[in-house]
Image (cartoon, rainbow over all chains, first blue to last red; front, side, top):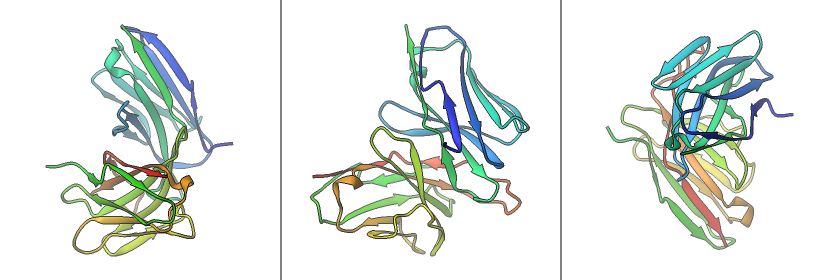
Length: 110
Length: 118
């Protein structure tokens, strides 16, 4: 079993829909990251969080440390949000090394 | 402020050749990480370096792979005697600091080098 599990693996939505991507992890962590990988392959860091909630534009990330769970929400989704969203964690004993989930492929149709 | 730069963006090698991948971190960043993404798989950590030091190489294959981050110049990931299974996208990321109290910093990713071994 992977230390970081994401769901769903694939997600198709219509433009304007509210989207949730989930991430569960099985180890103690220092921080959790959400990344976006564009169709061309480039990777952008969206959030780093260790507690609570962060918001940037239409993106919201939450984390529940007790339940070892994080969610990434996208409000008013748009076709340009189509990408792979990756959850990654810094384990408590692994320093700055990141352990990644398999990613969630999001497709937003117009 | 230029982002993390990687070159080449695409590299084709024949089996048995050497591959050298270069990564220039963002200005002011002294921490470099290398990750590998095999086809249809997720990202995997390979190595974490600071200037002139390898901090964590627990993700590096024991043979044929090496990495360095010299005092001057880019970080280099070197793969000797490449095999077809080395075909992958290799991403470099950099960060400005790591707080020893686990207050970690965002990692900024380069565009990746796509290695194809024929």
